Image 1 (cartoon, rainbow, N blue to C red):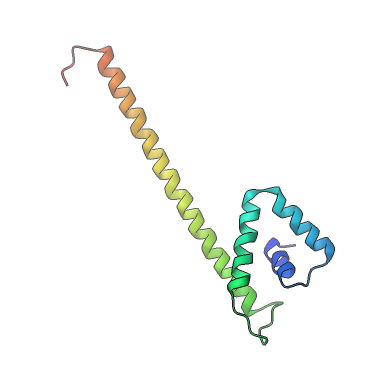
Image 2: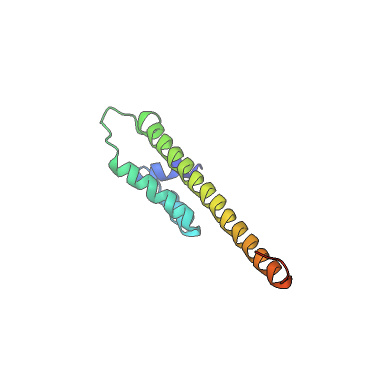
Length: 111
């Protein structure tokens, strides 16, 4: 089952005990899974849902899925920028070390 749908089912109180156990096991497998669950839980608790909204399929569920997708895209962008920054820092460090080692091994070069 789709994990987001399973989380939604558990939070709405419509999950069986087996589904709740499967969700607990999925959450325990990694920190990322726990973070996804917590994000959805917070969204669930902070989303105002009226009695007329069909919880099993339309407005509320789609809204939560859009918010989750947006948060995941933002998280991926942050990771990408962090990786680029880290690569740049390492590259600068390597060039600095090679420059200083190169000038020490050839003392006749004027700086």
